[in-house]
Amino acid sequence: MMGPGSGYIPFGPAVGGDEGLPQLDSPYQFNTIDDFRKAVTAGYGTDVATLTGGASLRLQSIEPTLLRTIQEDDHFVFFNKIVQSPAGATVDEFTVKSAIGGFPGSGFNSEMGTIAETQGTYARQVGLVKYLMTKRQVSVVQQSQRTLVDTMAEEKIDAARELKTSVEWACFYGNSTVNPLEFDGLQHVIETTADPDLIQDAQGAGLSYVAKEIIDLAAAVASYGRFGRITDLFSSFQVQSDELDQKLDPAFRVVAGGNGGEGGMRIGTPVAGVKTSHGIIKTNQDVFIQEGQMPFQVRPGPFPGITTAPGAPTPPTAVAGTVALDPLSLFTAAMAGNYYYGVESISQLGRSTVVVTTQQVIAAGDHVSLAITNPVDPTVTGYAIYRGRKNGTNAPTDLREMCRIPITAGATTTYVDLNQYVPGSSILFLVNMAPGALAVTLRRLLPMTLFPLYPTSTASRPWAQLFFCYLRIAKPKHIAMVKNIVPTNAVWKPY
Image 1 (cartoon, one colour):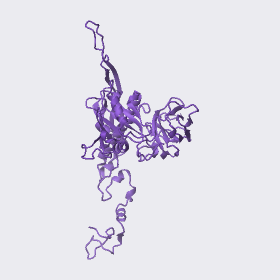
Image 2 (cartoon, helix red, strand yellow):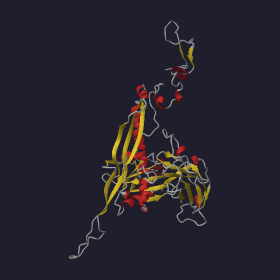
Image 3 (tube, rainbow, N blue to C red):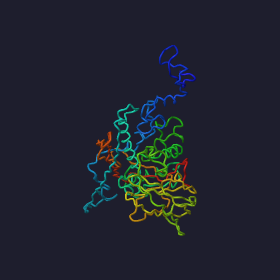
Image 4 (spheres, one colour):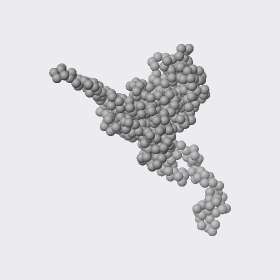
């Protein structure tokens, strides 16, 4: 065991003539381990704490482990769970049978009556495969030196996780009208289906004590004409913790590993499933489902590699509703107050810096119309709309995303806020993932593939990693959602 003063490391001729052993009178003395380490690593960076990129992988300390604070493979919950199957072409064709013909009672007839002719209802459907790609490269020097990890292997893993991150996010939030390069995810398909029985709106509150919203949606999917069964729900970590683990009535909770003995069904026990008359719905926490993100440039965590961004719109003009109240408005008296809005341009390159409106006064039953002047940048395909807290500030960190909208042809895009999307909220998705149902599948034209690229004028080994796929929702009436959930213990609240 090292004793007091062990960080004092002198070097020089040893007392008694033994070369290499320390002595206290050496002129080469260091007061700390850091002083010693910096002295022996002179050249190509002497301050270990400032090294970034490939240089940070060099073995310059006694710690041999690469410490990761990134998404790992088990974070891709939906990707890992969903059935994957090959697509035959970039335009993937399939047929949906939505009815068998007739109606309840149509089979009855008299002894010699004319037999009515019926047939099933079939529809040809197509899905468009989307192309996910990322380019990586490792210098020959970096690959040759001794590092903490095999740099090339590590970059291949990172590239695969980058593509999985895009797929996982798009399975929930993808919207081809906002960005034509994305495939449509659960939220967009549910909203496009426009079946009110498949959407529950928490309107900025949490779930009910008995998870009425989940039970009602499970019943709707199981009803006549849909003939489905909800098997899984996907929620944010905080919705799982606040609304299920700490709040759900014990009569409806299924806990991990069974009841867990006496008290295993009490409030506060982790909920592994929700009991309904139509079966147990398994709970899945997904880190990619979050409560309203902050604007892109101020979100926690850097976005390395993003060096360009689309052109930003000019600050939008916001106009509150006139004297006549809007019958579609969901602004209540408790929500009335002063608000700021923010807008970001969206393109394949990422998002622009956010531009913020002047403060708007919103009354009960009111609405706000945002007039966004479209930027000249032709790559812009849509906008992200943000809103601040009631009586909050106009700081970008005090804004939360409400929705994404497509750009409108012409000079101006208009968005009317009726409070149908609540900032700082998240969505709970309910999905039929029963084996053999094939209600929702991930169709792959090309599995995760490494495509070598030729170096041009650099001593490097470049490659591309590709994954061509899309989310096929063959039975849109077998998916549902609870939107605008603000967890009970959320730090940022919209009202």
